[in-house]
Image 1 (cartoon, rainbow, N blue to C red):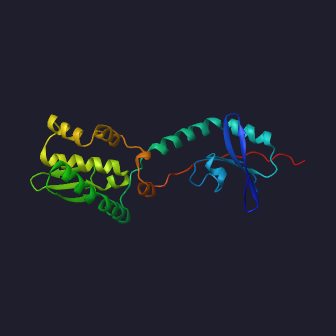
Image 2 (tube, rainbow, N blue to C red):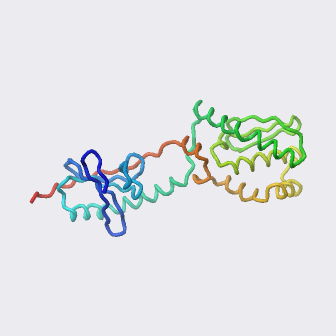
Image 3 (cartoon, one colour):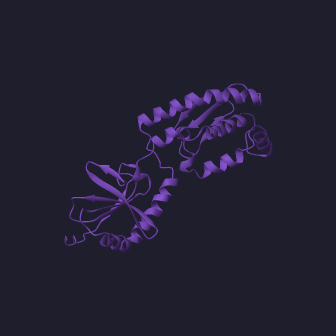
Length: 232
């Protein structure tokens, strides 16, 4: 159990569903699904995002019936929560977020370019970071200039490295033909896996800073009136 300001939170198992039960001085019972604003700020909140807030003297049998009556809604919310856990939320790119992205890329990209231009026997290009709607990166071979998407800064370094190598190879090979593929495979054997992952990005690909920059999830809740049982 975990105590918070004198109120007790406990776990309640209803069939195969684990819930956090919060006894409070309220007149009705309510259900909430969602870790943002839903689960209590205690160790129990890490065990279940299904939170039942109930009057202090409500019988457990009444609570179980209430949860079972609303089990379909709970299951739909849990499915949506799992889907959101895998999604990479889109950012509107405020000035602060753009500054964070540029700072992270500036800390990583020069070193990657230095390493890979040496390995690929290429002269040093110039590079910039900017918002890009549909690409992770682009380049202009004639001016030896590489452009990287700010969005790329949200991802683990392996994905940044892949895009840098991809654009560097394009400075020599201007298409995606056999020569390009051969150079990529020799330089970065995992490039196809990394490319496929960026085609369908998931939240577990994000770097720590990228997670901190995410748009907050909106928790979903439902409240249902239930008559308070007679006190013994």
